[in-house]
Image (cartoon, one colour):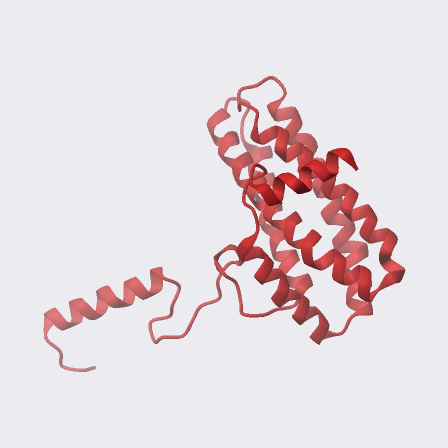
Length: 206
């Protein structure tokens, strides 16, 4: 160990802690970042979307475990759920679904069905975002959103993703994954943002 003065060790320790907080290893290697903090430079599209699903499911479970009187906690969780779903449906609609529809035309019916399921989620998110957390139907509407999205996720992971993985090569999925991450950086975070609002309005009038 170098024979540095105490002040130097103190400075090194503070630098090390700052680097850890910023997501960088003590020896300078970048750590893996969560998807909403930039994520890996490129990765398999299905892996990225499954990571999204995992986080969304976690928030669903927290909401379901919250007590009837946990109004503030439920309001915070619903806000996080809406943000996650707004980003997730945006990147799937903008990148994943069009690419799969183009490259695997035999899955077009599956893609169209997924668009419609996203429409339902978009409308529910828009309604929830405008609703007071102590409103009579807040919990019921959140529960319907959770049930619909959970069913959608299960269908994707058990049926649609395996078909896509079989039909596309690793390089194609990595290329789509890189585009998903690009779309994520510009994705809306709330249903009231213009790009999200347009998607929701399309859902209502289509």
